[in-house]
Length: 484
Image (cartoon, rainbow, N blue to C red; front, side, top):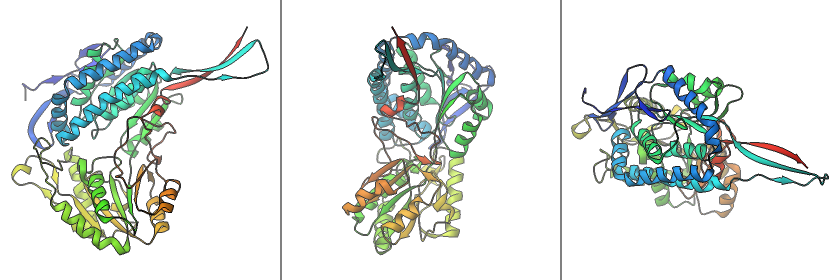
């Protein structure tokens, strides 16, 4: 333990230890004997130093030509791709996802940096016609100032990239705090920006517990923007704590339905359930948590789903052929097992949910994918976000019943429909209360160049992430009346 690599904070262009003098460990959820390193248990003093550095750097950064900002993002993307295999292996070891998924995530993050390097240079204002021939009226877009980026452990580089890149390209400075459960790949993103030549103070990286530094990086009035992805409860706390002039962007939880109508192809429905509900060990905010299926097709669907799930190989994400890795943390394991027990009391337990502890599973956080049937709307497994490989199957009587049950939730992140009926294909995007709508596709996944966000309690902001819309949150509009 004493010989473990120690990873430092990055504040004002320097790699520095925390003022607290304390560190915390980062261990592999597939094998708790595998220690990846020790990270800084940052204090309020560290957070203030990072915010102050970002504040000092803002004036010069906003005046930096946008082409120069773009070059830094592109060089950081180059660095990620030059080291993609190493970083993907580290991501799998610290978060548990399959190596192929980790490789895709690092690659996607590089693509995101490149996307905003280009797209950020297309921001324009408008001119307005008026009656005074000696006056021109136009708008210009400007950065906000210091932006705090707070991200979760399930996509610990791709989510930071889609927040940090638009913040930097539009001239904001950044304080980035990753999840303490997956800080290493966030460190690598900081390393990439440092290697790319980001000026001192423009980008800062600090690790540590939210309980220690969360209030400082969210309530400090110097912070002009907070972009957070995580639980709804945490997002609500941050949103309430922020200063009045601080803009907030909260991407939160989901209870995402996959609706399978009577005319659906069952093979497709099963495939989409496995991809959306069990891949990434169910640890995706857009993961399929509820399957709303036509009563007449339920038994056929369940039979095929159980057969398919029984063939899935559970194991270490570094092992070739693995299809489901461990849960990312012991806390998440306990949470999922708690919901499995609740499901057994409320609904019909069809398959899975066992805590796997023997042999190769002994040192990790493994659980078998769980399927529950005869689930009704009031049950906990139908209403609460589980964030694990647990699927609740709910019977529906037609399209209208499906929409009513799908919308009967405080969440509105993603939803999918499986059908061949053209009328329902057309109606579904209008009827469903979700920010991301899929038809004959899995609930998970979104494009780098398309907006992403939720409705209801899945988001507290009208500003979307990702795509061109991701630039809007980090800029403000100023109207100029120019006389001559």
